[in-house]
Length: 331
Image (cartoon, rainbow, N blue to C red):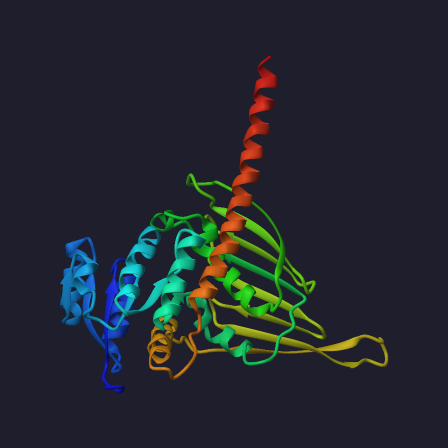
């Protein structure tokens, strides 16, 4: 029946997946049927907490659920999502969507062919400050975003570009309705063998430019984006859920300068993950469009991969130059 709870499961119940399970368990429109994890202890702990089944192999659930959240390691996203899409199951796939653009393309084609919802877990899309900003028409000329975080060993299976920067890439690509024409990027390894800090400059066909910086080796946490528009400026503080809006008022007759008018909108500590899962279930029921589509996730991954490759290339050049300098010094 259309109003019956959707049978749901969570695949991968580690740091993030256990919270997915908790949200499904509290929603009337969902029935948490099972959780799956290769670690039996994790699976059983979460299953016991929510009164559902625990399995070690996600394939035991194929054909038994209507929708799944996949919060397994990124390297497993493609194979797990493919299994569920192939059996007619809707998928909420944590970011990044997959490890390669080719894998993302195949998943999107499968979802489209089967008429299934494929949503990507770009959680920042559900930040209350950003959602309020998106209620008005935007015409960005220049965007500057900064996303800083202290080092966490659990997130080092991918570079900082795929771990943190991809949030801002996704939002910027959504904000700017124009093709991306050029990308420049640089970065460095600090604590891991992968990229720990990176900066990218994105240029669009309509003239908009975005400067994006992300670090996972900072001493503080910060998630901010500033958007400059004709006659206006907006700043989003994702961490504190504050939206600052500024626009040009009347010209001061004494100074000849325009007045700058502004206001700060502060939003409650809303549950973004709960909102994301509710939106996923509503999209399955046809009540609203998918907020972060598989195609959006693929587009973000494609740009993030391009940035990553540029950083690797620049690091290789720097390493070669350093080697030549060292060799020259020893002669």
